[in-house]
Image (cartoon, rainbow over all chains, first blue to last red; front, side, top):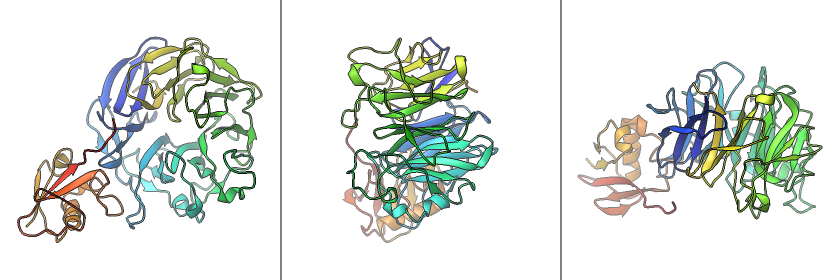
Amino acid sequence: MRELLVGTKKGLFVLEGEPGAPFDITARAFAGEPVEYAMRDPRTHRVLASVTSAFYGPKLFYADDPSGEWEQAEGIALPDDGKQALERIWTIVAGEADGTLYAGGDPGVLFESRDGGASWQLNSGLWEHPTRPSWNAGGGGLCLHSIVPWPGDPARLAVAISAAGVWLTDDGGKTWSRGNQGLVPRYLPDDAPPEEEIALCVHRIHRAPGRPERMFLQFHGGVYRSDDAGATWTDIGAGLPSDFGFPLAIDPADPDCAYVIPLTADMDRVTPGARVRVYETRDAGASWTPRGDGLPSENAYLTVLREAFDWTGEGEALELYFGATSGDVFGSADAGASWSVPATRLPPVLSVAAGRGP
Amino acid sequence: MPLVCLRQPLKRLAGDRSEHAVEGATVVELLQELERAQPATGGWILDERGHIRRHINVFVNGERGGEDTAVAGEDRVDVLPAISGGA
């Protein structure tokens, strides 16, 4: 049995089913409220959900059973100094240390929990970074949307902020350095100031767990690979119908593998050619292969958001799942070779987290 | 003492009571006092800057009020979600 936690504009949907077949909706929580992201911690089986009420602001909740009672987590707030307010929690990620979780949000903030998500503390190293006054927000706000632990080493972490670029720490978040060398912001003039002063609109990053120095990055125009833990980046977007897009996935078994779902362009954020295609590389970005068997091939103008693409398993057993703002959820049980539709006619999908359930 | 009146989900957070008599000379002082008396409401009406959230309206004795609206005596302050646009 597979479990998909689907965050939508109108609540959290829990889908359960077998790969290749329609899934059942087994729970809906936070009806009517935008659920930006939800995930199940594989260590504790606790489900955590980020809810951004238009009225009551961003909150983080947790539950052992998503169809039961939810508790509000403590500490998800900015310092009470009268300057800024938390706008949204974009993502939640399990850390390497026992009980540790990370949450990223707007305005470019990282929270850490050491008790499985019940209470949280703001990462002060990033919050008080001296360059923060120069950070630029992207269209979705100053969102910290990607958090990438280093397997086996809790001290090392990478995060990405739109549009403040990639940030790296190797001391558990006490200090942070930029990891943006090689990224080319084509949306800025050629004579723009150096990287410390410009807006680097990173859309998504992931790390290859079997070779942790290998990372993939979807940029605001450009797909990149790093072989030195995010210090420098090489453009690998050639061969894609468009190198604009948001989501990114990997195969944990193959450090040369990544998947992207291109959109036409920043000024036309729908699937190119009116058809839906996932593009796969198995040679670290030297070439890309379209994977669309079972996906809509005509009259399909879909938008897939950055948190709405996830995977479970690896290698030949890799399963991929993504949702669109059309309310459709697509899934593949054979590493992208063929696709089915686990769910359709949901509210606009903001996020998808795939797993094997409790 | 002024009365702050809540509806769900704020009522549930405030001990499942809709009416709360609290001290304060302005609307925002009442809401701050409400947070102190009912900590679970913290962050739901006022943000970290101490401002009333953008899509929450307050009415003082039936008329639209703001953070600095003066209150006294038996004034009634209703806290309501705004009729904000969008689907």
